[in-house]
Amino acid sequence: MQVSIFLVDDQPAFRAALGKRLSRTQHHVRSFESGEELLDAVEQDPPDLIILDLKMPGMDGIQVLEALHTKSPDALVVLLTAYGTVEDAVEAMKLGAFDFLIKTVDLEDVERVVTRAINHILLRRRVAYEHQHQADQYTIGDLIALSPAMRTLVGQLRHLTQLPNVPVLLMGETGTGKEFLARVIHHNSTRGKGPFVKISCTSLSPQRFERDLFGYERGAFAGAERRKLGLLDQAENGTLFLDEIGDLDLSMQGKVVGIVEDQSFRRLGGTEDIVGDFRVLASSYRDLKAEVAAGRFREDLFYRLNAVPFLVPPIRNRIEDIIPLAKLFMMKYGVELGKDVTDIDPRAVKQLQQYPFPGNVRELQNMIERAMMLSVGRTLTPGDFPGAQ
Image 1 (cartoon, rainbow, N blue to C red):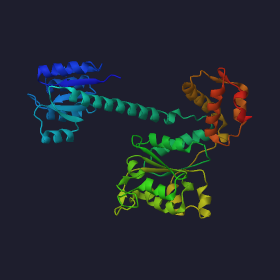
Image 2 (cartoon, rainbow, N blue to C red):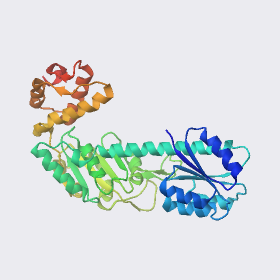
Image 3 (cartoon, rainbow, N blue to C red):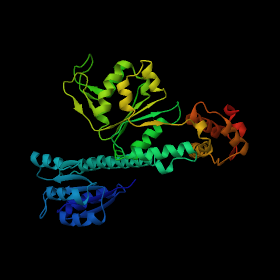
Image 4 (cartoon, rainbow, N blue to C red):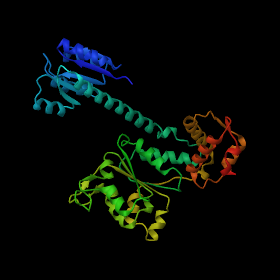
């Protein structure tokens, strides 16, 4: 994948030698003899990487670096100088330079840093693409909502995205898509550019849950040789998702109350309360009101989480959505398996619509995946769904 490199140096010989060497990498390279020329160019053609001389007539490298914050904020900058000092390097790094190098006749050091910078750029592109692709699949407008139950749900979702700080409790049977909808709420709110951090309340022991969620200070327990940030630190400016909180050990529930109430927590072994900035979403397949009555779930935690209760309907109550969902999964597995299966036989349609789906949407997805793997034609037939017979 090609990147755009701008090289700025007032020495023609050095500029030509480095430009020639960088051009061998198949990347697009442009050369400039002054910072002023560079700044004019970046407004029309923003580069990925700028290799910038520190000592130049007119604007020096530090001044150019400062100007690039507004003119080309996404470009990585590597500063070069023949007379570098520690103070110059510190100043450059404070201003966001990717690296700082001393010029030498041998250009291998420069080439090594450029290669590292290019790898960083490519990684950043990939992360941005994956983040955008991930966000796209959670767009509210693309949700399948033909059934009355799902249309009501989508209306509630739109309302919840406008409340980026209010806790939400998603309740529903296993496999209904509670985590998926939690991600929809996250990605469509003002916190959508922040992290979505999930912690399982089912699979972790109380000790592991506490360490993972809160983090710990050095010496908090045997083996804690250094501070470790917890998931609450990682959720800053984003969303914390407590998956299946109804399974959380009662001893841990009390520790979660403060998190839901005011986003405050204390690391294990710590002495100071930390106030974060994150939203709490939680899910449960259990009836938490009944769990409270039975003494298995804290009442104060229930009411704090239940500020906005959200019931996710089982798929048997949204029959109109079964075939559209099935076709969505067909597209997904068609790409993954390299199969051109585009339709469902009417008999198989009736079969799927009459099946109760005890495993809900998750079961439907698994059935479509299996059917796509076994299918031999372009249409799925009743024989491709032995589990639904």
